[in-house]
Length: 175
Image 1 (tube, rainbow, N blue to C red):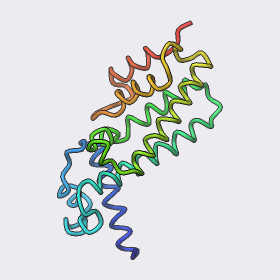
Image 2 (tube, rainbow, N blue to C red):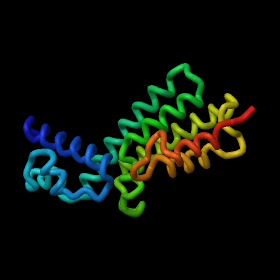
Image 3 (cartoon, one colour):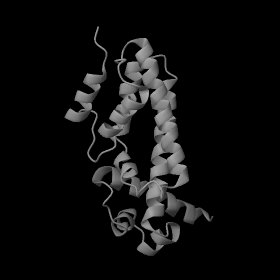
Image 4 (spheres, rainbow, N blue to C red):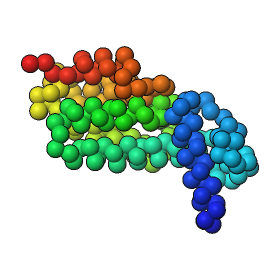
């Protein structure tokens, strides 16, 4: 791919990621092209349809989250603190986009694989926090990951919003 074409593709993806994080999955292709300072034709040359753009943004988002989560996981901090930092990171990403993708039969295999990796990492971290005694032990790791997904995979999720804070407070083990 030519250098200018690669720059345009990256600009489109970055702009889409920003707009989707701020405004949710209803952002139009025309709005994305306009915000990127490109024509709609340029956008469609790189992403033939809305779904291919959304899949690309979802994959980029999940790769970013996975890299940040792995870095957090390798820290020596208590597992509860690591989990809270990852949840805060999640709320700054357009994860609602991923939960709004079409039914599982049409989800891009790369996106599905990345979702599985992120969920497995979180499940392991939850189980570590349970062994550490900082996260309540009466739920399975998969159940906790499901609850966390409810909190962070929705439009407008924030680390300090009532749903996220009450959920984390409810998951915290009490002496």
